[in-house]
Amino acid sequence: MTDRERDTPELDVDFARAHFPALADGWAFFENAGGSYVPRSVIERVTAYMTETQVQPGASYAPSAAAAERMVEGRQVIAQMINADADEMTVGPSTTANVYMLSHAIRPWFQPGDEVVVTDLDHEANNGAWRRLAEIGAVVKEWRVDPATAELDPAALEPLLGPRTRLVCAAHCSNITGAINDVAAIAQMVHAAGGLLFVDGVAFAPHRAIDVRALDVDFYAFSPYKVYGPHLGALFGKREHLIAAEGQNHYFFRADDVPDKIAPGYPNHELTAGLAGIADYFDQIHAHHFAAGANTFHERAADVFRLFAAHEERLAVRFADFLASDSRFRLIGRATGSAVARAPTFSFTVQGMKSAALPPRLEAAKVAIRNGDFYAIRLMGALGLDPSDGVVRASMVHYNSAEDVDRLIDGLEKALG
Image 1: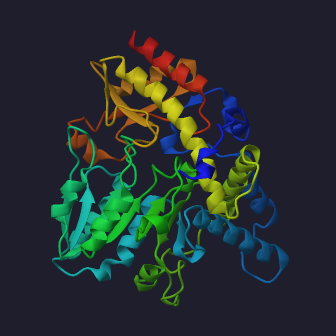
Image 2: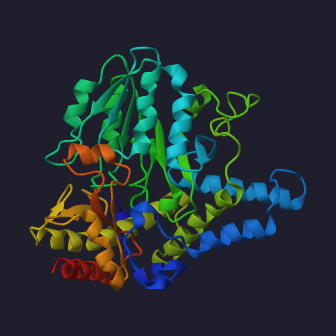
Image 3: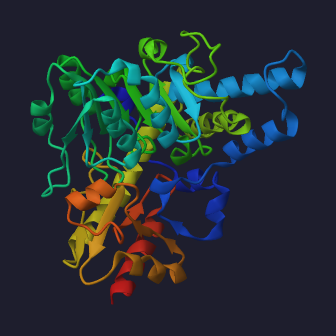
């Protein structure tokens, strides 16, 4: 542990919550894994773009030049957050769309008999597009979840790797179980076999700092709208891979026109500019909690995520202990709130009750949870769950308070009687 990690203070939750206008509505919001609230700084960035620079960006006249600068800044912010270069970061409408575009961009890399490994744990965004490579003769192998633990066992990946392995696709964190996979170790295994690694970081990114260089991933996707930003998807690819990929934009984009050649058209203007508001918020949190500034936004974000993780762990331990205290709950995955083991995303079923019946019973207390398959339908089947009813999911982030969790617990106790 570094001195900086040792000196991490406790999150001032009231200070953080004051930045989110939506929290004034009185709801205890536990739908964060589906999309987080946004701080005022993001709203201001989007509003400023649309009121001051709602023009075609990139011309020489002042409003157009300012529009381009704001979009560049937005892309730079999310690249810096994960320790990437801006030209390695594609911004698109969603992670699902970004994965679909990338899967077409690298199709020429596959010959009949080449192998791609996918899981039955992941959100379908990191499944369907890759499985379609079978249409060109690729062999699709499945790294299957252990039904007893609802986790991926790294030992089960080893026999799936071989000389024809071209790509392995796995999640950094499950959007159902919250379990965190050791991506760096997986990357070593995949690269030793000669393959590339694509990581879905959507469920991980709201809770922990990401360093794509340290992880040594080839591709990494996450959704800024689940990291307190506008509704966009972000896709990192090592520069050499993006240059080698087949362009999905207009024919006149050159091979080295990265990342623009990957995404058809152009990113949403005002939302891309709004991404810079994430950095504005993180920097305000950082300045409030740390006396000394860090040199880069990546370093400041890492400091802030340590604050978040410690606070979220306290909430998660409280809720995990509650679920463990009542045998009617079946928690999917690890029965712990430890930040080392999981993100604070909890999915569960209730004995003798349809999952769909539970969330409405908490609405009178203004507690927001939801049921469903959350696009992890293959995992539902692997665990013997009914995909049409799914699980109940309660997902926390740093702006949730201890009082929010107490309201959630009280609401569940009353709902179950």
